[in-house]
Length: 382
Image (cartoon, rainbow, N blue to C red; front, side):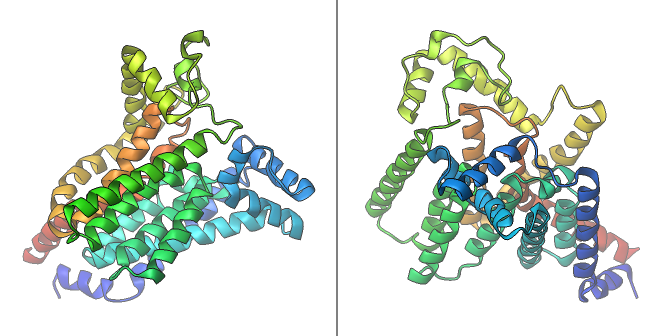
């Protein structure tokens, strides 16, 4: 039996799924062993809001409703006396289901070995998996973005039933993290290309304008929801990394409203300062380098992601031939998240970038698939 025959036999059994599950379980155990249940830093504010919700029936300021999922989970754990461990277990189970959905979609659109390797890459991505024991919003949000996207990609038709399901899942994303709103434009574009490509161009323009107006309204509501949402602060103090000012606060941003219009007005009035910040934030976002990380940590990030970036650029061309809608969806969420970072700041631990990891992996899948075909064929000929 040739090498390729052995490979084919192996991936026609359930062994890949069992191996992926074993790897996933091991990584989750290591993450829990390394970090325990993290209730400090950002988790503290969600615990505090959950206490307020249980005691008074409301959160401190309206912006916290945009983190409702995590706050309700913590409040439920406290109310039922289940403990924070129950939340971590739930986050891990949701992560496991999302990982299975990721594998299922990858296997449908690539060779079994490619899907296996790509899913294994997601499982052993330590920065991505590490948030599963944090009482942050990231773990649930990361999982929901995969589950929602696979559901969207699997749609064969779009009717009222699927419309309601998509709307509910999008709403859940938006109340898990405020950045869930960024999935609105990419979902609209995907549905427009996938199911409404034959609509009259004028109707498409009207639909695009209406959805753009709705997106801006919702974004402005988020900006004006109070609390910690001061989107002019990163300009006022020249934040590259959130919470780390590089300038002393000045009056240069005074007089501008905390709205999209106010931000645009500031940028047009101070283009040089804004462009400089955009460039530095872009380097931090895609470069992943952090001065406070060790050399080994920065090298690990570079080796883990830079080759994937190159593979994704190749994959875009391949995907464009078979699924323009998927390419537009993935690129739109990447550009939207990047744009959000340029207009605000980048996260201390690359959390804003990590939400893009599954989509970049999917874009990189065609090149990995080509490599698998090449080496499998070479082994067979040997």
